[in-house]
Length: 317
Image (cartoon, rainbow, N blue to C red; front, side, top):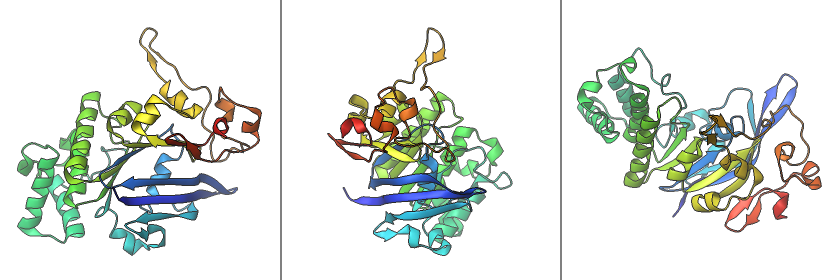
């Protein structure tokens, strides 16, 4: 397999009222053609910020200090906005978190699909219309021709999500970044959306970056997994290795977060992830870690090989 995307030693932060605060520390990951990489962790751990850097869709206060984002042997961080417009949607598509607000309520589904196809494929008229219909059919939207006339408010959350996936297919994107693609959807619809993503990955060789906190979805769909905590990748592993033999205490804690059906209570990880304004010495997970040692409060661990995984933990020094 060949690497289609590689993020190398990404460091970024935000310029706040009290100065620059780093949010992402030396984040590196790669994506092969036709592969699904899941990035997991609690809210606020840096999953979305890391991947939005790939598309340069960051707030004005964000600043990338160093690193490379290599797509097809070109560093996207050297691209200007005009060059990035040729990448966004056309080559790397985004499925945002909230399908309810991702489509313009004033325009029909057809209008919005055709606009994207014209922009990224240069097609117009009947040719563009046929591409749009085919894309809707690929994501299993029934009566696609009639649905082109519908407005977003006439679609359920799951159907809106399918339309957004159809846009990526219509533009022949090579990579799809799916940011919590099943948020606010019921369990049945979640399964349908993930089945569609899995099918297009296998059928068209599309690569997927899946951002989620749902380890059940990860177990069923990911080839590789990056576990993030406090803006750092703390474990990087293949699917089977991570679930069969998790190494980092944070990974183990995530896997142990379960719902007790007898008490209807969720067993959680004590404490909260640090914010970018917190100053924590050593390993950022050490205040919550049950395997904490003296060195953990003094020195931040680096990613190192541990069997078939990479793990940032002093237990593996």
